[in-house]
Structure formats: C-alpha cells, structure tokens
Amino acid sequence: MRSFVSVFVLFVNFSLCFADDWPQWLGPQRDGEWREMGIVDKFPAGGPKVLWRKPCGSGYSGPAIAAGRLYLTDFVPDDGEKLPAGGFSKSKTTGKERLTCRESATGKPVWSKDYPVTYAIGYPGGPRVMPTIDGDCVYTLGAMGDLRCHEAATGQVVWSKNFPKDYQAPMPVWGFAAHPLVDGENLICLAGGTDNRLVVAFDKKTGTELWTSQSCPGDFGYCPPMIFEFGGKRQLIIWHSRAVVGLEPNTGKRIWKVDFESRSALTAPTPRKVGDDGLFVTAFYNGGLLLKVGAENAEVIWKSSAKGERPEQTTDLSSIMATPVVVGDSIYGVCSYGQLRCIEAKTGKRVWETMKATRGRFTPPKVAAENEPGGGERWSNAFLTPYRDRFFLFNEQGDLIIARLSPKGYEEIDRAPILEPTNTMAGRKVVWVHPAYANGCIFVRNDVEVICVNLQRDKGQP
Image (cartoon, rainbow, N blue to C red; front, top):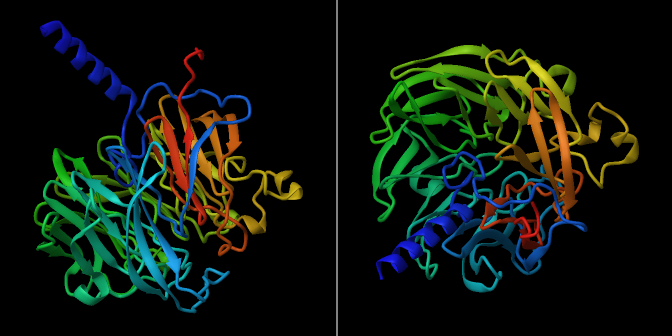
C-alpha cells in the first residue's frame, strides 16, 4: 500500500509539472511567463490543431483558466443595437456584459451570467479586463466600472461594486481596464475614486472596503496594480496618469512617489521589475522610464527623450498595449507603430528593431517589403510570452509565432494563423486580446469565437 501511495504521489507531482492554469492577468505568477513542460519547439505540418471553437460576444478581455474551467467576459448588444465601426465614436450602445463558464477541455457551456450596461467610451468593443480566479471565486471588472465577485461553481454574484456610482470615479476615456490583484485576503483595484480613493482594497470574500489610497484627478489611467519586492520590502506599485508610486500592500500608505505625467493617460502596459532594484514602465506618447527602487525611496535612472509617438520621434520603447518582457539586461517590447524592439535595460539604448512580429497575412505587400513601419501600422501589436529558451507571440492579425529573442536579434522559428481578426475600430481588422496558456494549449478569442489550440509536443517528437 505504501508503494502504491508513493507511486501515486509521484504521478501527481509529475503531472503537475506538465499542466498549469492561467487564472489571472499574466498567468499564475502574474509575470507573463509560461512554465509548463512538453510544449512544441515548432508547429506540426499544417499548423497546430484547434481542439475546439465556440461562439462568444465581443471583447478585448482574454480568457482565464482554472480547475478545468474557462471563464470569459464579453459584450452582447441589445436587439437593434450595433457597435460603432470606429474606435473614436461617441455614440452610446446598450447591451449586456456577460461572464460565461465553460469546460476548458471541450468548450462545453457550464453557466452564464449577465447584467445590463450602456457603453459610452472610446473603442467600445467589450470588456477589457480578464477574469481573476481565486479559489472558489471569480472576479470581473466591466468596461463601465462594474466590479463583481462570482461563485466559481455557479456564477452567482456574491458581492458587487460600481466604481462611478460608489466612488464617484470619472469614466476613463477608454473604459476601466486595470486588472484587479488578489493579495492574501485583499482584492486591490484601481478604482479611480476621488478624495484619496484612487486605489481601493476590498475584503475579497465580502467586498468590505479595507483601505483607500491616493488621488488622481481626471482620467487616471489603465495600469493594473502589481506587487514587487524592493530592498527586502513588498511594495504595491501603482502607475497612474500623473506618477508612479509605491505603497504598503496591507495599508495603502505611500512609501514613495515619482512624477511621470502620461499624455492621454495611456498607462496600459504592465510595469516590470528589472534586476533587484529596477522598475520599468513604458507609455505610447512618453516612452520609457527606469526607476531605481529601495525600501523607502525611488529615483530616476533614465527617462525617455522621445518627442512623440511617431517612429522618428521615439527613442527607446513607446508601447501602447503589450507588456514588455525583461530578460537579463535586455527589455523586449512593441513600440508605437508595431516595431518589436530590444533596448538596454540600464540605459534605454535601442539595440535592434523589426516589423516582422506584428505583420502577417493581411499586411499589404508594399508595406511588407519595407523595413520601416507604414502609416497604417499605428498601434500594431503583438503579445509576448516567454517560454524557456523562446517566446510565443500572438499578434493582432491572429498569427501565433514561435521565435527567439536575444540582444543579437529576432529569430523567427515558425508561425501559424490560428484566429481571424474581427475588430475594425482601429481602421483595420485586429484582434487585441492577450491569450491564456494552460494545460498545453493556447486559449484566445476574437469578437465571434473563443478557441483552444493544442501546443503539446507529440509523443514521437524529440
């Protein structure tokens, strides 16, 4: 019996090494890295196999995966309503924001919950924030500021808040987009409230307000809260449209603040830790900023000299959506017109750039023949996910790319189209959704369907 138990435990531990969930923004450790084993080095002939595809509504929010379930938010317009074709339209659209639960292995529906909402924001293509799964709860944040805690098993709403109503939060131009952070018993949100209520920590089980902190008038931005350790001290990093601040995670008390005003409040890419004491942020119009952070203070190491967002005006990295990746002394990220760049972390100096990662089957031949970005490639995007010695890149044209990134350059290993771009609000068809990588698969959606694509290495592959 003892031998059987030992073998069973060994089997379970072995299995866990190969399977992992993706329960929150940027994965299990909120760092964007995929750590499962047994994943393909190169796609099989004909491309990776789609295991299932199921219909869904519109949205920019990626799926979350945990305990054999997939959770996805979307937007379904009311009968007779239609989303505008352009992202800068000011027209209102009524409909429902919805949270659906499916079996992750098959896509079979388990339950669905919705609530009425009227969109009055730029790029009203659906929710921006992926669900956050923590134990038996699923947390969602809608584009108009509806925060909800659901029972993971049934979808029943446990508690809810509305940031504009409950915290007098101004409506961000592009809607609420900062992914909540679970830290112990706290659910930490960028609520945008006035009077020292920009950041709010709720009891994750009851929704009771635990503490509030900071103020930022007007559009406060879109950056998710993050926790890093600096100087042996856990610090809650908040990047809003006026500054980067470090807070005590348990109280919200401010430790330090560095002013960094971001034009149009475009603070979307997630901050990244660099080495032991570096903190990097990047903004579309303003470029990058590297801070040296200690236990009690922070100082600027370098700040971008970018004069704007156009290719000739950028210097280091001016990202609009994609979270950069730090590997050693290098930072990799997508700049303002789709340039995948490598920069030196310590100086911001550009090492190389390429347009290959954000281009694909829909790029006009004349544009594809040029090394420089074309005028129609503004905001071009690809989401970077490091995996062991390589990267998976999912670009806005629905191509999945395997590549190696190093200071020496971009080495594309393979690519395959896995999803059709459907959102037209950028003036071209795009899919601006960060995938989830779990259980040997990639899970991703557009405005029509959510799919599961197998990325496990065949048994016969070396």
